[in-house]
Length: 314
Length: 305
Image (cartoon, rainbow over all chains, first blue to last red; front, side, top):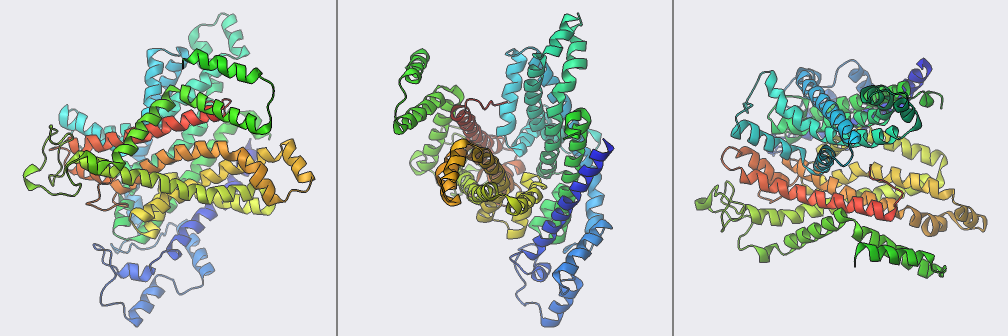
């Protein structure tokens, strides 16, 4: 098992390097000269009419490190990023890393709560649907699954605000305490919950028909131990993979949901960065998201191997 | 034709003597169409989508209003007989804007899918058919793209190219490219092992001829299914990015923009956010139903869940 973890971790290194290369190249693939972007007017997004004079231009290029060879720039970029230095914001005279890490806890709270809602409600609904296929609960879970893949996340958020904050007055729209995370987290977790419910249902129904489960019934066990101790263990193996993939959707969902609910977080910071042409900020955000997603995928593979020994020996 | 009749006819056709190749193809195509038509979800989806396309296309004939006409006297009018979905903060008719916005959303879905498929299919074919180091390099590049969750990849590309509807479609298209490439490569690898492909290679078919005549037809089914489902995802992604202010710009009647306006006016006019969202949902849902129907009818062995 340890060997598998080590190998899987090693395989992640080139991907992480690739991710940083992609993020690094973003700046150089810009259709606009980054120096001009730095000098751009943040509101209108147009280049200054007076133009940047020769000396200022050279100084700015030097300041951004753009006068060094590309390879050197990349090594510096990775080195700095590994040491928590993601450059300076174009708009705020602040370190991008400081700005992002300041907002990170809020985003982590949101995604953690969203993930918890997705997994818990998804599993509960999926198990209930699998135990009684074609029942009312099963139909509800199917309906939710269809809604989950067809409904725009931000619209669900708007509707929840309308119904629960404005109409029923249950959750204040401008809540700042711990309860402020409830509606955003439900919005964020909804799609994942629907997907996890369908997958759990399918996987559990399959496992329930296997011979060892029939043996467990034949031994005279009651429903709870058969389902939880015998069937669920195997049925959850494919679900784990999807939870890992869901982490990616949660990250992108957080960007949208933070904007809908006017919440602070790295997602709303990134949106602001794009609108204001604050490129280092966007780069920093994309890098953090890419690295987090890659690490989550490694974690899922390790979990998968722990749950299914066959993977380890492949 | 009732379900039973079709089933009996289908069985009859199966039992009849094996016809020449052309006949066989026609029959299997007809069977696919029958299976698709018998799928209730797929049929509903097709009808709804057809209506939506018609409504978007015939918008000028269906509504007496213009989507950008500002009417200060009609601001925030609730739904009524003159304005079925009410009016927004400029007194513009919400229904009219939804109809015109349908054109944009359908275009985003189709163009983005075209970009994704246009880039992804050749890459997948090349990687699968040539193999070796070419395959290795292409797959590593895709791994890097896949290391960014789909929507974030699109957001990153928009950040690079700049905001706007055209760049949005390119960005959403590129972010769906790895999916196409992977599916095509996988199908090519499976198709390559078929005996008739090995035989064709043995009698001296060139790689290009092999790909075009023998492999591509085999990978069409998964491509069609993926493309149809991808249209729905691209519409959702496009609306999301426009909602965030990275796509179409006001006064465009794009659905995401309408919802961004609706969000600001949620306390005063619920109809400005409810109806555009319903429009997005109906469109993506109908396309998803069609995609699932295609999946089931093109390959009955593939199950939905």
